[in-house]
Length: 267
Image (cartoon, rainbow, N blue to C red; front, top):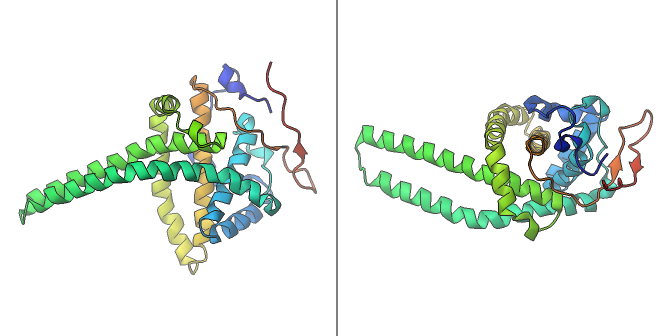
């Protein structure tokens, strides 16, 4: 794989959003069910497990940037011997989102508190109270969507760079959000709608199914993040050079993924 995706140089087909492919991706490997089971085991581990899963997905997606739409290639299997490496990679988007949340949460609190005071001032005026609650709900939903438009590029950049300070590149985040806000909003709405039946099925399976549901949702979420990143690059966005990761070829018949040396940088 080249160090810079080929389509960012105007070569090859323009990437497109494939929403259902985000959920189907786990089964593009012949060991898909096993990988989903191992991902579910990760979800069982409080906090740390989800970070490990994100670190694994990050490696898989970066290794497949040039061949993202070719589902026949499969992907490297989850390897518990790389638990520490996965955790290290998944830690950065968590830390960055945590710090960003400490800044954002007071804003949300002020908004909710102000809305509560405004609604309380209406007293028992039924129709006006319903209208005010509706407007407040719409504004709150718009606020959450707006925050996600900023959080997606922020956490994505942190996952790629594996660094704290450089992740907060506001010019890059602004450029990403400006170019890709429609795709981000649609992906958020898609995940919100599809997560409902996914969780219901998980609870229907004696609650045990919730863990595979969370694992599948996390994989789909980050798959969509990287889909958006690829489209961003195809639209002239700035490439974020990741730290070197192990490069893989698809699962060979009767064996495990073969690890290759990192590619040479472009001249």
